Image (cartoon, rainbow, N blue to C red; front, side, top):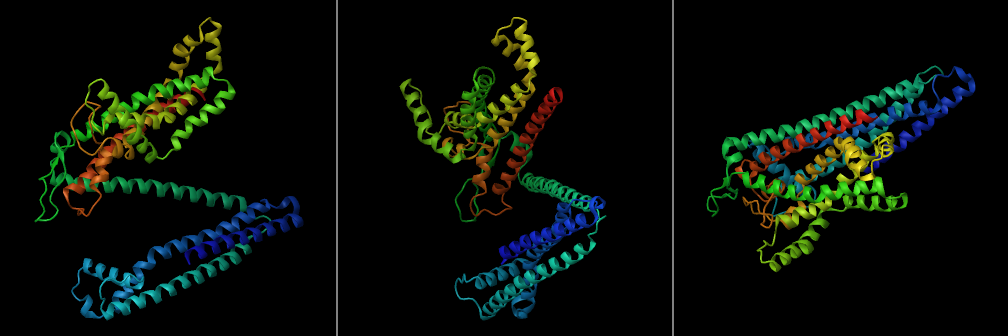
Length: 459
């Protein structure tokens, strides 16, 4: 039903646009240059004021419908079922009623629950039809009302542009508040974690074993939340990835800008950028099936023991994945250097290599560094490749041939399962997430500042 309502809103908006534009054309035919706005703005103004309120109404209706129906269903239940029930018990009862209404019956529900499920199903049908009727009635009234406002001197263009500006401001506010909400949830849960685990143990502890007993009869570790091995593992893999990606990405950008002709560039650059679109799980398979065995084989040939899951395999493949980030941004930075600087250097007798190293690279350095920092943020946040190729054990080591783990992998593993959200094991994921958020935020801010400085210099 919701899909049909959205289609009805689109259809009514198109009809409203046609009606408004037709009115504008009649104004032009009757009054000529005295008409303030073009017919298309009359149509757009009517369409947006017919479709937008109806769309907002449907969204609010869908958001509030479940809560209202739950309240009404609880009010219809016998007092014996709801008297003295806590909020959690009422939520459990409503969940059982919704399952019965949806046909998902487990065990033998009570007759009162079966009746409530049938009632809920009937009310949901009524609510959907009521939403359709109200939305259509609202659009008809708005169409008639907005159409009556149109006139030859009506400022339809200004009205449409003000409405679009309001929508853009609203979208920006939603994005800002969403970000603030994410930060607030991270900070709140991290504070709850630090009430259970001292911050100095988390930031300076050398042992990361978050496995603790969930039930009283369960055999498990006591739990250790020293995150230093997790941080060093993240740093080790990110360093290997950057050592692979930075020279390859930078040299490929220099080749494409300074040495490749147009036909080669037209082929090589899209191929390089295809790497950025490959799913990370594919890189993970490549790492675990091809690179990791190759690393172990190479180690056995020279007599070095290599772990089945190594930081070298994960970091190397991750470096291949982020090559397009560095290559593309470095390419843009090198191409943005004014042609006069390059020609001036060559005119002074410098070779092409000297021009690249002494003129182009210093001039493009802010843009290149910005691209490298953005790629580093991508490497720190990568999860799938590390899960498949580096392992899950938090080992405090600087040896790239050992298995390590990263912050993102630990966040994933700690939030999988039936652990309660007030458990230190679960809350530790939010503490790691907060640290990861702050690190990537700092890297992105530094990168953006460098890129802005670069753009201001050459625009």
